[in-house]
Length: 106
Image (cartoon, rainbow, N blue to C red):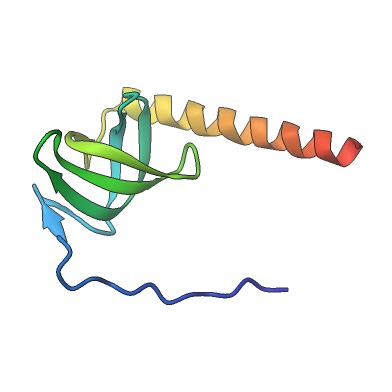
């Protein structure tokens, strides 16, 4: 059975752009607060007085929504950062496959 699709209401008062980054843009960043490299698509932009401007993005490494500071975000990453992220994604997929295989054995 196919999953239901829900229409996401866009808040007209929400911030759509900050520091040259837009909602929906693919980015490479260091997650907040653990500083692990990651990539994903910006979903929301927030401004906080204590930590500064940050965004929520859908993390391809963990499969979750995570936060990152704009200071730690890049639109064009270095080759070293790309390689590190690809390794993390491969490792996460391998762990997911091992867990799925373990469940099938039971």
